[in-house]
Image (tube, rainbow, N blue to C red; front, side, top):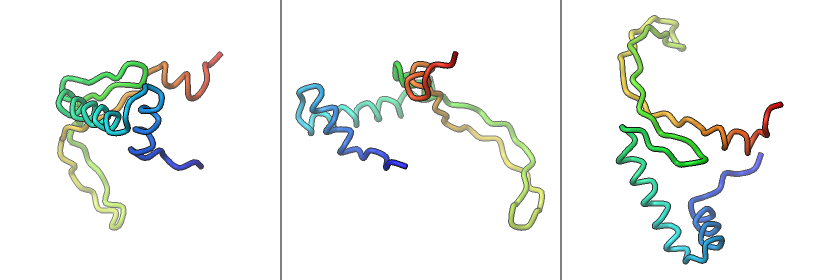
Length: 96
């Protein structure tokens, strides 16, 4: 399996494709991340890629895998990323 791209590799590719300096591309990536963190609670969409959404999980009963003991897991908020249909189709191919 191929290794994941690093932040530096992504910045270099974005810079080359858009005639930017690597430093400018890194700033763009950092600003996009900061914007996503700030607006995730309202849902943050990156067109063609997906959406960050805040989801409330209910309290539930779980099991400690080491001891088999039943435990109560508290309700909590979690951040999920929902992949866009366009991204799924581009990566997996269109279903017939």
